Length: 358
Image (cartoon, rainbow, N blue to C red):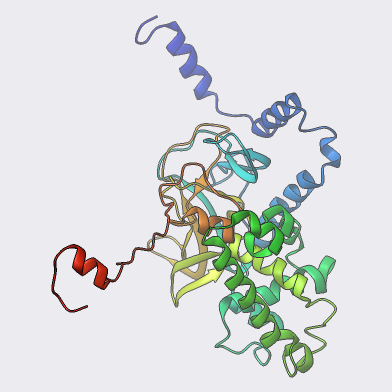
C-alpha cells in the first residue's frame, strides 16, 4: 500500500515491540553457524574470553552492558564479535564491536571508568614510584605494566579478563616485528627505514630501562624479574601499545595515554569521524570527582553493522608500521617524492649560449 498502508502499519507495530533480551546474540550466533563459524560455540576460547571480559567490566567497573533496559539505563547498543568483516574490502578484520540495534548519530556508545585503564599513573602505582619516576615516558611505563600483568601475575592479575582478549604479536604483525627477509618484500618503500629505526629504538629503550647494567631488572629484581621482562615480551607490549593505546585529551590534568578495555576492540575506518575521549563522571550539575572514557556515534548504524572509530589521519605506511594492516581505500595515504635541481655544467652553458659563471 501507499503511505500509511497495511505494510507500514505492520512494520511500525513490529518496531514498537522492541527487542527481546539476548535476541541479538542468538541472531549473530545463528548467522555465524550458517557460515560454519560457530562449531562448538561453548568450547570457543574467544567466545569465553569475550564473556569473561563483559562480566569483569560489569563487576569491576559497574558498567551497564546488558541488552535489556534497567532502572535508569538503556540497553547497551554494542556487542563483541569474534570475527568481523571490513565493509569496504570484505576482508576479515578480527575482533570488533557490532551494533546490537539501530544506532543514531550522537548516541552514547560506551563509557569506561579511567581506573580500569592502563596508564602511566596505574603503572607507577603497580611498581612503586621509587621504580618508575614521574618523568618516565608513558609508553615505557605502560609497557612494563602490560608485561607485569600478563607474564608476572598471570592468573592473579586484576586485569586478567582484559589481558586474555589481547592478541599475540603474529595476530597483529606490524612491520617492526618483521624479519629482514620479510622486510625485503617492501623494497623501495619508506616503511623499511621507519621500521629499522623503530626496531633500533625499541632495543635501545629496552637495554636502557630494563636489561642493561644497573637498570630496573638489576635494581628491583623482585619487581622486574628477568625471566619475564625479556625482549620478546617487550616487543609484545609495544605491539599492544602501538596498535591499541588511545590518547585521551579532555582530562582534568591534561592529556594521557591509555589502554582502554573494550573500547580498544573497535576497528579503524579512515572515513569515521568518531574519536574516543574522556570526561568527568556525573552530570552537568553534579560531578562525582571521577573520570571516564567516552565515545559517541558519529553517524547512524544499522543492526549487525560494525561500529568504527578513527585512529587518526594515518597513511598506509603508518598503519602497516604500527597496526599491521593497510587500506585499499585510504584518503590519507601519501607517497614521499624527492625533487632536486640538477646543477648547471659548463657544457649546459655553452649549449644555451649563456656566458654566466659556472
